[in-house]
Length: 212
Image (cartoon, rainbow, N blue to C red; front, top):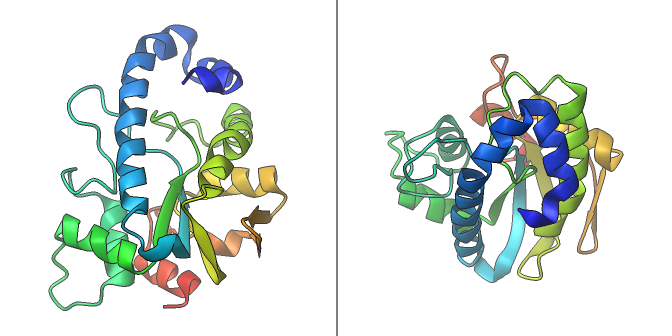
């Protein structure tokens, strides 16, 4: 986390210096755990070719215990994995077997990338100017760095979606509604936000955005 000095300054302004100072060891643990899982997942994508990209916020905060993460088959079942299962896997039972679902996502050339490296609870912060400032910084220092990984190559038909509305709006502003990665240029807009009226990831919207 030492490389994110400016970002942590903003994070402290959002949540309070004492809160973030005491949380940093746990944030480091979650970050290391989820980055390892993300890198292992990338290794499962055939030829590293990305057809579908979902830009998310961050792994969920947890005070203790094993960190939770959508790409970790040992994590508790979560809304996002359920939505992704319904997006890419057409079955009648709708039963989620996390490891099988995650492997299927990889085989489809699906990638999820978080835009913030800090696993805090942002629910009541997303409409604040400081949240926008944080996302503006981490989009460039964290998200784009992940997406430019030499392990990845992108389909010319790459499609992109977002899983959190206010996070998406902040990213769109930070990037000027355009994403350039590894020779691919994509125009971004609010129509790529794949959530329902309750702001939860929505399989029907994601299928439409990904043209499935």
